[in-house]
Length: 57
Image (cartoon, rainbow, N blue to C red; front, side, top):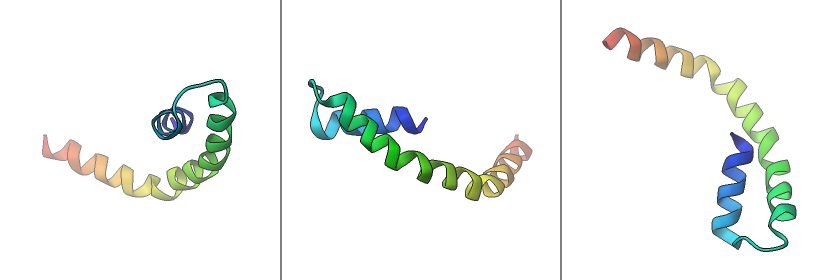
């Protein structure tokens, strides 16, 4: 997911040309650790929210 988002944001911000892959890789290398930390930190909240939504049905 972080790779896809980094690719989309990089393409929007800088365009797609010969240097796109290197710019995308640099963006992804910065985004990936942040995405992992956010996923683990927010997992309990996301789980409770999912259970709450499931109970509303």
